Amino acid sequence: MSVELKKEAAAAALELVEEGMRLGIGTGSTADEFSKLLGAKVASGFKITGVPTSERTHALCTSMSIPLTTLEEMPELDMVVDGADEVDHQFQLIKGGGGALLREKIVANAAEKMIVIADDSKLVDTLGAFPLPIEVNPFGFKATWKAVEKACAGLGLEGPLNLRGGDEPFVTDGGHYIIDASFGHISDASALSDRLLNIPGVVEHGLFLGYADVVILAGEKGVRQL
Image (cartoon, rainbow, N blue to C red; front, side):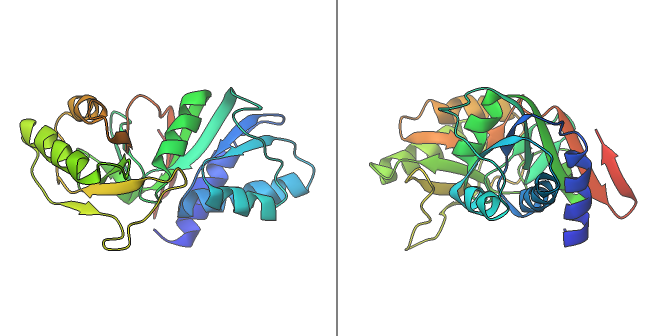
């Protein structure tokens, strides 16, 4: 996705943000463009209060002088704007390519509305071409890995599991590891979600089901809102 398309999707999302909103601010390259545009609008006198979904987003928003708080101080939000790695026609998402899926889901759950910004290529008929991030506790990691394999196999899902970062594992803001599961095709996202969350070592996964309210897609033919 070109930077220009990311900016176009971000600009369309910014039009939905109203003065005084309590706003969740997402993580990732497209969400970064939203943060930059939001920062410019805040600099002109526009007032919102933001809750960032990662330390990365916190740093960017701080550099743009966007007023920030936490979910402890402001546990209910009006809206969250975030990107997605995949979205299907039922507005089911795969997120977590940037490694912030746990905080992104906590913030999305606290918001009344979720606006997803992406490019046309992220819209798919069936989720699964993008590897599903599964955030796991480092304690008992190998046992959790085996349990994930078994749970996925029980649903007929086969494909390699990879520890993000390999020999030097990527560590999330929450201190966890991420397993990227390459299934190619997830026929029943809800069943997979339930199976994964029943594994004690799984902290969260990147299937966002029932969160997205509006999807803004930018493409060569312009921006469309679903």
